[in-house]
Image 1: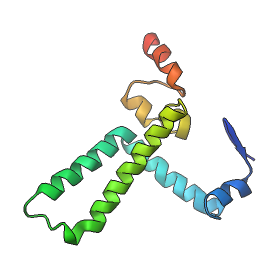
Image 2: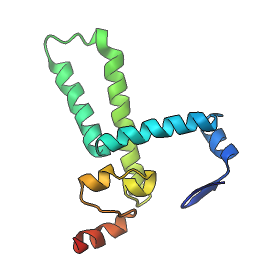
Image 3: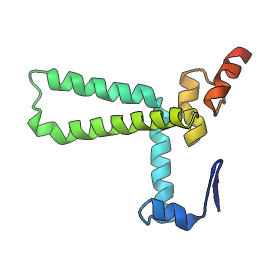
Image 4: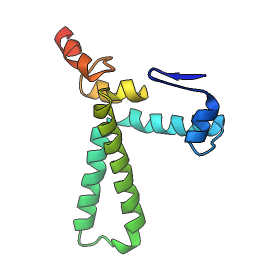
Length: 126
């Protein structure tokens, strides 16, 4: 049984929610997602990607038509990161608490806080 603090699902339920993926496929996707979130904080990455697109589309020498799929991909990734951050706030969790990834906490000095309510305690202690 997979236990996720507030959600208990057995593997068949996890697999079904993820479109019938196998355990190996879920592991590979989780590894990829965790690797991306460990590179930069989710907020910084979303902002950087959005700013990059803004810069690119205002460059006179950039061919938007030839690169529209790349631009679309960047904007979709940025939106997914923003949505994940909104989910953190909606569930009153830090990124560490929601995903197990520590980068946002490290970037913003949140220590090991997993809940939004714990942030002030972490900051007072440091």
